[in-house]
Length: 162
Image 1 (tube, rainbow, N blue to C red):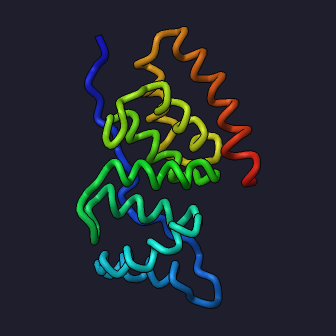
Image 2 (cartoon, helix red, strand yellow; image 1 turned 30 degrees about the horizontal axis):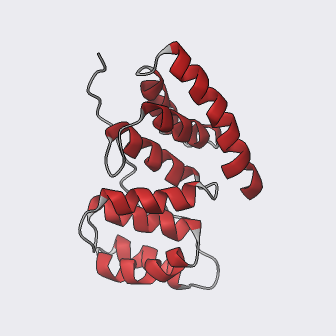
């Protein structure tokens, strides 16, 4: 029998060093830090729709936490997935956590393991513990298959963006 697990999502907005010229992304981060989540959403949405992974990730966080929008794990998973498939380690970590919880996606410890493995391999410090937690829920055969798929995902979703 599989145990019930508590998974943690990265709750804070990912902060990157702003360039010398502020733009909509940096303005969205400032708005979010000031608690102006609706403004952050309105600034991030067009950037996310244009395919910018950092904006997709941060907008996903707002959806996961109900910041400026109604909480929606399905939309958070969609946004994290878009960014994760462009090599964004934070999005990979949060997507893995959603799979581990079954929030917005069907609970799948193999998918959780795979996404968390990618995030861990890119240096995300929270991912290894959750990856190991997902691994503990898999049979030896399931874990072996997940490791193989993890290598495939690495080649597809990380290497092209390095």
